Amino acid sequence: MPPFGSNDDGKADFKAYYDMHSTPIYAFLRSMELCEEDAEDLLQDTFTKLWINRHRIQSKEHIKNWLYYVAGNAAINLLKSKEARYRNIEALQWMNEPAYFEIQRISSEWLSWIYLELERLPPGEGDVIRSLFIDGLTMHDIAERRNTSIKTVSNQRNDGLNKLRARLTKEQFAKLFMILMKLPM
Amino acid sequence: MEEENNRIFSLVLKNAWTGAPTEEEIVELQAWQSRSSFHQTLPDRFADLDWINGKVSEIHKFRKEVVRQRIIESIEGLEATTANVSETGHAPYTTSSQPGKRNYINVETSTEYIRVHKHWRVTFMVIFIYSKVLLVVALYYYMLWRKCH
Image 1 (tube, each protein chain N blue to C red):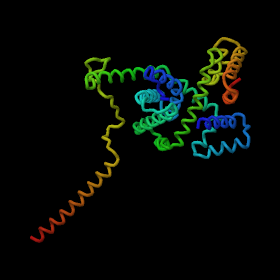
Image 2: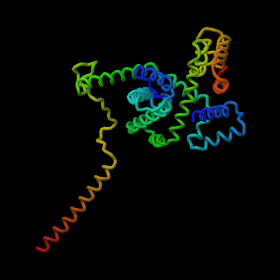
Image 3: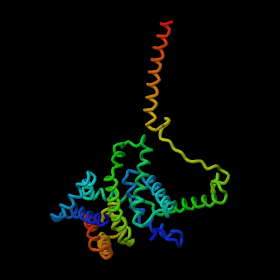
Image 4: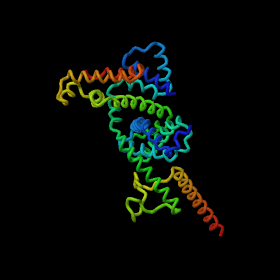
């Protein structure tokens, strides 16, 4: 089955691929030592190229590899063009190694998975868990900021964890919980 | 591949955060780590909550919808250009947003020196040395010729 449906020239499929892969690819580009603006620019170029080449890609399985390949090469080319300003020349050399490429890709996918699971939480509980995890605030900070009691914040944190548990498989929740349990109490 | 990555992710977290992987799991993780120096260091990174928080915060800054909109505009621009080319037979000189204004390619340089491919440097050096050798040989034979006459 072709990866881009013929009904609307593949626009719906393209949107789905963007939703699925944009965050891990962005994380991957940031891990290649690119700043926010450069990472966003290259992400834009990568997905624009995907659209241009959509009829050449044989299957859905190839899309992910194709995106990482194009984004990675674009990142290396950009860093090389900035070589005079880019001081970490040594880093540029090992960026060409396949093992480095693979590790950045794996770690970006793992980190994106953690982030996206937290993002999918509903606003109330999600805000508490995201503030604890992403912003590094304490329960006390959050209670003060929301003008509420620590007990309420603690309840929301526990509700959030329960919602995560209900949504994820046992294995997935175990993964996330191992990190979340280290959050400040 | 996906399954293996998921399995290793579980092992890395188990090793880092609960400290209770089985002997078999430790062997599996060590075998994976032995693939390269990069594989070696990854589990240590995921044992560092500050590192994870920092990286997740970076991802949090991603303006997904802004970039989506930029991609849509870029694709629409490309499709408009393609349609224009197929109608007129040549690429347009003007942009649709700025009619009448020439659309130049934005070129940014990182240095003020002219840059050529590295192979040209060797070629120039060879030509320079070869010309000096020919000059010396020419002078030698000229002096020889003058001596003879």
